[in-house]
Image (cartoon, rainbow, N blue to C red; front, top):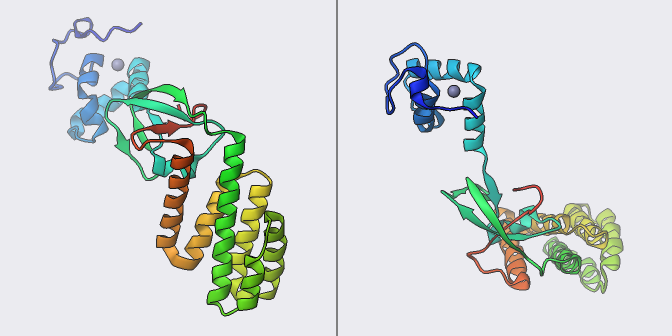
Length: 243
Ligand SMILES: [Zn+2]
């Protein structure tokens, strides 16, 4: 165990201004926040960097400071779904990223029992049907009313897969929406909920751009929150790899 006690290095505790030729471990610990924020004067920074080259203990300290626990808000769930969901309690300052949040530490509380393979399948199916509906809307907008009616009449996702792929060959101007709908059905039929949800979001983006995409992702979050009984204050994480 390394002892960062400054007396070992001949410096006084609380000595912030680095006047000696070398930075001590104790000084480094005191300077670490400024170091992370890029606020060190150039001369001090170069001494700190020299110290980090020599000192494994301070390098380990930096790595520990940088280690974070990633977690998801309900609205982030569609991006990161995996086999298990857990509720987590985060400690320390919570930072917000685009599709996740993170904090210095956290504790798993309990598994979200409602997230089962059957629920995942139900979610995948719901998303595939959303992509299907978007493709039918795209056909209508392009003026292909009978093709739209044919697609809309599909009773199973197997039908959607076949009909969407056939129509995609017939209607080049709607090919992408139809391909997305066919792929969404295929993903749901082969048990890939996150991909099915991705298809639904992109099917919406084809129709209504970024707003359509965001609205579809929001719909997916609401579906998951409602089905899993998640309250907004609860964050869920991937219990295996994100922690
Ligand atoms: Zn050190």
